Amino acid sequence: MRHYETLFVVNPDLSEEDTALLIEKFSAVLSSGGANILKTDLWGRRRLAYAIRKFTKGYYVILEYGANPEAVLEMERLFRIDEKVLRFLTVKKGDEFDPQALALAEAKAKERAAARAARQSSADDDEEDGDEFGGKDDYEEDEA
Image (cartoon, helix red, strand yellow):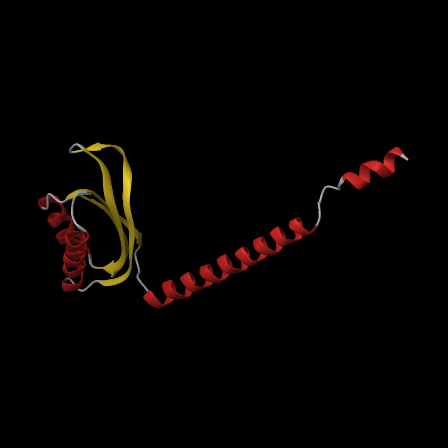
């Protein structure tokens, strides 16, 4: 089983229910092929860099999963057939897929982000308490 990430852009004119059904359809194709879906990231409706089939916006979805190459090929075949999918891109992130190791790495990344946010908020609080470059008082002392 290999580690993959697939980004696909869906027709923006679809309703939320239709978009959810389409995402579920492709997730089910992967699951039926023996895939282990790690994450489904919905980026939502965004502006496209260029028009695709006269659409200037699209609904972006990212799937991260572990699967056999046959399951990925089947999903990509269905992407090509379905007119609701404007574009797609699948990237192989690794030859081995270990969901526990990925979950652990993601948890560590969240901890680092939380620590960084805490340091940033404490640094912002310090700046509010006093002027770090010296205030008007510093200049008055030099004149005296």
